[in-house]
Amino acid sequence: MPAEAGAAGVNAPVGVDPGRASIARMYDYVLGGKDHYQVDRDELERLKRVMPEVADLALENRRYLIRVCRFLAERAGIDQYLDCGSGLPTTENVHQVVQRAEGLAKVVYVDNDPVVVAHGRALLEENDRTRFIAGDIFEPKSILDHDTVRQHLDWSRPIALMFVATLHHHKGDRNRPAEIMREYVDALPSGSYVALSHLFDPGEGGDHETMAAFQEAIAKGSLGGATARTESEIRDLLPGLELVDPGIVLLANWWSDGPNLQPLNTAQRLIAGAVARKP
Ligand SMILES: C[S@@+](CC[C@H](N)C(=O)[O-])C[C@H]1O[C@@H](n2cnc3c(N)ncnc32)[C@H](O)[C@@H]1O
Image 1 (cartoon, protein in one colour):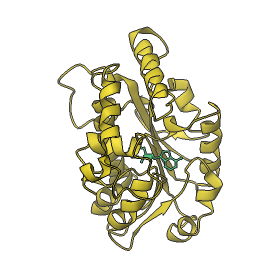
Image 2 (cartoon, helix red, strand yellow; image 1 turned 120 degrees about the vertical axis):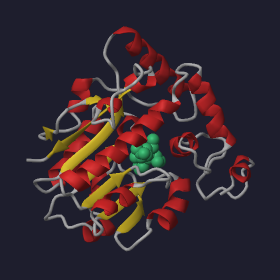
Image 3 (spheres, helix red, strand yellow; image 1 turned 45 degrees about the vertical axis):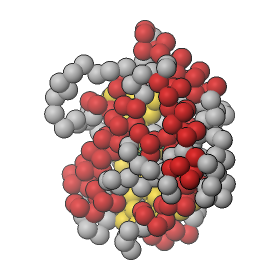
């Protein structure tokens, strides 16, 4: 979809409100995609006033996602993936990374953004080992009971559950994401992995203040809010799971491709993640 057609509100998929920004499209814009509207670019500019390096949240996150996929496929030997909140197809997607290591690896992508739904099936279902479903990842039962999820993945063998840069978008009860994750984890076979990333609140100091201001700015815009979590709150999202070394860390420090040549900037210090295994 040409961005300017979208900006004019023409050719927008059903369900898109061209007057409201979407996290999926803003993320696509930062990653160099073409499925974004003026309202998404404007919202990013507005957030930049609070956190000038905001684009690095997305860039650091996507680099982490790719490294995690390599780890899961190459080292952990996982060949089944449930990617909750896939985002728009971009240069490297989960199935491309994991199928490079294991050609038969299967992936089910889930997202509920109308633009992702419009493009996801066509672009993410690149081969017969990948599926895309439209669904609400914060309704675990609806995903876990979905025919495609049940039939495409073998629930008697380990599965990797990906919740990368998604849980902080849950709105409403702050405690609900931990319950949601427990429902998913309970359903996973032994030996499965969970990978997540999350907006990080260091709890005190200048970065805590910046994160508070950032959350306030998001709440005032059309995204309608996002919730950062402390390290112990992120741990609560991985119930009964064993953290894989190095545990819950800033994404830039999760098995990075080499030493950080510069000190991490504000955005890079405010997104954390972890990979954990179900015993
Ligand atoms: C920031 S993007 C992250 C994309 C990808 N996981 C990554 O890390 O590169 C968040 C994605 O989660 C999706 N999302 C947010 N809430 C969702 C929900 N309730 N159900 C399904 N998808 C959701 C958004 O549409 C968006 O595509």
